[in-house]
Each structure stands twice: as structure tokens, then as C-alpha cells.
Image 1 (tube, rainbow, N blue to C red):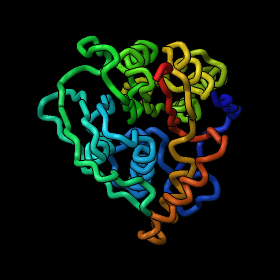
Image 2 (cartoon, rainbow, N blue to C red; image 1 turned 135 degrees about the vertical axis):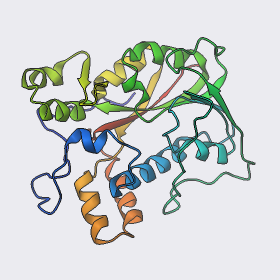
Image 3 (tube, one colour; image 1 turned 180 degrees about the vertical axis):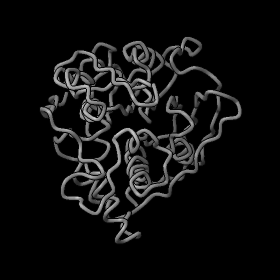
Length: 286
């Protein structure tokens, strides 16, 4: 079990318009991180990194995967191409997936002679998995901040543990307390901000009226343990700031591969200041 990381004090993530990025236009935290389908330079970089991270995480042998990440998640077609049979829960029958981004730098392992798997679209609410039998999936993907959007995260994690086979794994991406603190500061919620690092549960309002739940590394570890899962690792989805990425790609539009290379090396440490945290856990007994 890895040691939980240390949450910084009142630090906020480096955002567009930070000091030192004098040429970067000032944009709010909510405006920048609330629209992950943007085709801005940062989100192209973000999804390229996410794709490589998931490709490295996927089981080597074809299996059965449950995907709770929603249609905006760009990694689902990648899992199918790697030979896995994916059951994707979608909000409606008309839902279509966004275009998958290409792999960069060859970091993602290619399937070893496996034929592509199949994608099974199921219209269902990912909050309740009662219609799914226990112990039937080799892996569950809960990316794209889905566990932060389900405010009673404990219930969904317990269901994820239930449907996993012994030895099965889950990949999850959530909003961090660092992002939550930036959002609270942006809305002048100073009393709430002072309690944010030590809060047992941090629910953060967005300007559009939505609410997300933000986590520390320690809270992720505790939630997984309570659900009967063992955390394998946790790290930021990205550590390079949005302003840095946009500045570099503004000067050199072909710098995406180099930035992804830098990110994959930088995120290997114990710096948990990213706005989103990525974690992998396994169900004991396999």
C-alpha cells in the first residue's frame, strides 16, 4: 500500500494567468476546468496524457470492462481496440462518443495480436449498478471525474467493488482539494476555504449550479479501503500547468509530443498538486 501523500496548505494550482505567465490571458478556474470538451491546447494535451495513462493501465489480456466515464471520455474506443469487451453506461441511446485522440510517442503498449473487442452501449444511471451481477468484470473505469460528480462516492465505490472479479482493478479520476480550493477562492468563499484542507467531505459549488466532491490522497485511500479495495497508486493526472502548456504550444504547435513526454516523467513523483487525481485499486483475492 503506498503511503498517502501530503496535501499542500493553502496553495492553489497554477492556472492560466498566474504570475510569471504575463502573456497568458486571465481566465477563471471554473471557465477553464469546467469545459473538458474544449479543443484548446491544454485539453488536447490533457486527453493525450489521459489516453497514454489508461493504455498503460489496461489489462494485458483481453477481458470484460465496465466503463462508467460517460460519452465525453475519450479512452473507451482505445480499450476496445486493445481487445477488451467494454460495457459502457450512457445517459441515452442517442449518445455518441467524442473522437479519440491519437497516441503520441509510442508510449501506449499496442495489443499483442489481439483482435478488437466489442463495445456494448447500455442506457443506465451509473449511480446504481444493481442490474449488474456481482464479480463479472475484470476492470472498471471511472474516469472523467465521475466519482466527484456522484456526491455519495462511497455508494458507487461499493458497487464498483461488488461487480469486480477478485483480482479485478479499477481506474478512477477525481477532482482534488487543490482544485476545490481554487474554486472557493474564485467565489470569495473564504470561511469555507479555511476549512477545506481538513474537511472530511468537501463539496464545492460551481458557477453553473453544479456541485462536485473534491478529495485528498488520504481520503481516496480511506474510501477505497472502506469499499474493500486496495490502492495500488495515486498521482496527479497532470502536473504541468495549463498556462505552461498553452504558452509552449502557442510558440510551437508541434510541441504536444514533447509536453506529454515531460508530463509522464514529472508525474512519477509524490507531488499531489494536480487539479485532478488519478488512482488505481485492486480487489483482493485474485
